[in-house]
Amino acid sequence: MRRLRRASKALAATRKKWILLAACLLMYANAATHFGLTLASLFEDNRRSNSIQQMLYDCFPSVGYDDECPSLAVPDSYLYPSATTSSTQTTLTVLLSLNMVLGDAIVLWRAWVLWQDNRTVKGISLVLMTGTSSTLQAGFEDFPASFAVFFSWCTNIWSTTLIAVRAWQHRRQIGAQLHSGGRTRAQTALLLLIESGVLYTLFWTPLAVYAALDIATSLDGTYYDTPSDMRDRFMGAMAAVQAGVLIDIVGMYPTAVILLVEASSQYAQRTLSLGDIPTLLPQSDHRARLRAIPISETRAVPGG
Image 1 (tube, rainbow, N blue to C red):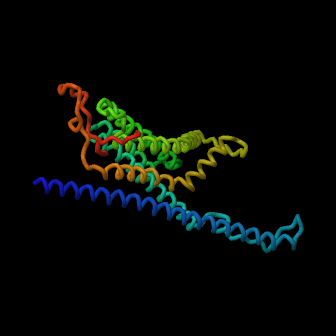
Image 2 (image 1 turned 90 degrees about the horizontal axis):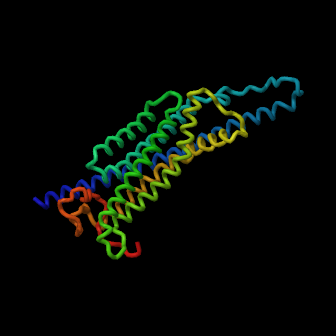
Image 3 (image 1 turned 120 degrees about the vertical axis):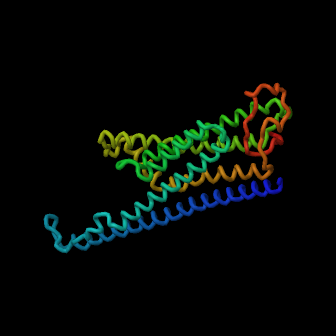
């Protein structure tokens, strides 16, 4: 019976790894496709611009400044977005949206595992996940992407806070037993998750500000077209980040989360609980019991 349970757990762990690997590969495939389509769009825009410039160059020597150029006939496809261009932009948006949903799902999965017995955590996580996916898929006509960026920013703050609280609880519970002053592998993994989560959240913060400004601008109908305006420059820079490199960065942190978890789990595949370590607290003190943290073993790492 024990062998059957072990085999079942091993199969579940293997299945989980394959699912996470597939999610990471899909995100990087989306990013590569996004990059290729972006380059193709840039080359097409450059070709149109060169064609129009050549038409003007061929026409102007034959007429005066006040005359019209009879041979200048710019195709409408050069001046207005074609169906191909529109479909390309739609594809780029879909690829970015899919990566944002996958990235948020992986980040929330890590926090969900650490708080798997807490219904409040599960409920808030589901609300954030639903908010990101729904605003990307259907959303609001004028600014669905801005709402999705804001939800994703809130998701990263939420997940990083959950991991930080769990790390603090873990440290408080076993700190008295670590006489060597070392750090457990669980603490090391949690600390790395917190640090990377903080950096990732800091990256999302300017985008969240951009999203809030975009939403406010769309609601009151006020647009800032003055090139010297600082707000306009900020909006332009964030729009370029969102259109160009966001899809690549979105896949980096979730991949780092998976690698950190797997690196810490390869040493021990068991759950840390209060029964695994000696305790100086009365057994009747149920508040002091440590909730399960499926990260790694309790062996101390020197130099922590």
